[in-house]
Amino acid sequence: MKSKICLTGIKPTGTPHLGNYIGSIKPALSLAKKENHQSFYFIADYHALINNHDKSMLEEQIYEVAASWLALGLDSEKTTLYQQSDIPEILELNWILSCFAGKGLLNRAHAYKAATDKNKQSHKDCDSGVSMGLFCYPVLMAADILFISSDIVPVGADQVQHIEIARDIAQTFNHTYGETLSIPESFVQKEAALVPGLDGRKMSKSYNNHIPLFLPEKKLRKLIMKIPTDSTPPETPKDPEQSNVFKLYQTLANPNQLNEQREKYQNGISWGEAKQELYELINKDLAPARERYADLMNNKKIIREILREGAERVRPKAQNLLQEVKERIGLKLK
Ligand code: TRP
Image 1 (cartoon, rainbow, N blue to C red):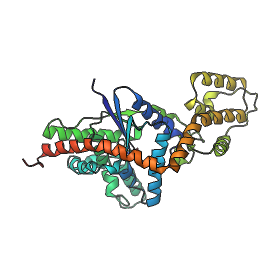
Image 2: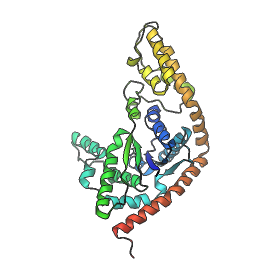
Image 3: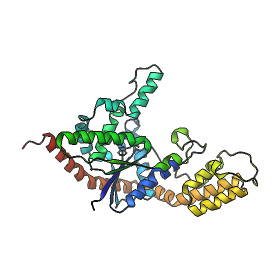
Image 4: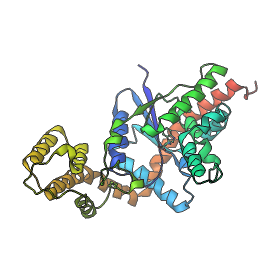
């Protein structure tokens, strides 16, 4: 059976939080472990350039995100991890694909729409502050995906529209020149929406309600102890389903732990104790990764080496596809 090519892009925006881990990193890592799956996970640094113009921050965030995924279990032998900007063929393909992407299609892409809606609301020119990078980014994403004939693209629900755009562009191309580009499918992880933040809303950096993954133990404990709870006395039975502390516990616990915890809530548990148990669960799960993360961040050479090897593995594939595309469109003179 032909193996499935599974690809995803990771925008370097700093150390991930627990919501990212449960919602996207864990499922993507287990997908990579499946038989008959070849995985290619890359740092989408050109995408980051759309809104990060701080040189040292960008550089640091590329290291952070690579170190995080490696620390959390990405096996760089099995999964090819690379930096998008190391594969210049993606940008060549980006241009070619942009000639097959309707402008109307991109007008409707949600990042651009959100920016223009916001401008309109504040009575500004609708394109105020919008760069061509922001406008065209779905095309770059299509190039990221199509250059390697991806079958499956694990993404968050907010990215599904972009996979649809990539499919649309690939179909238009194939329609004109014959079957050349594989049509990718998105693979959406539903758990992402279920991870609550410290305040009960969806965990997100922009709400500042997140639990950073590699906080030192003491800070992690302090953060968890600050989760707001009501003043129900310790011995009063509590409904686990109504508790944010329990919902967070649920994201990492196995079925046995979950049952035990549920009983404790029903029999009465103090919030302090419930939070302590949550802290212990998270801490136990993350301690080994935290150590690996620190080691990698202290040995950045290892990270550079892994990314370089990844690029070496993936680049010939990009060159092959680009060659074929150029032949198809009539740029290779014979
Ligand atoms: N746009 C994605 C995000 O913001 C990251 C990304 C870039 C990506 N290129 C991709 C994801 C290709 C999947 C496939 O999360």
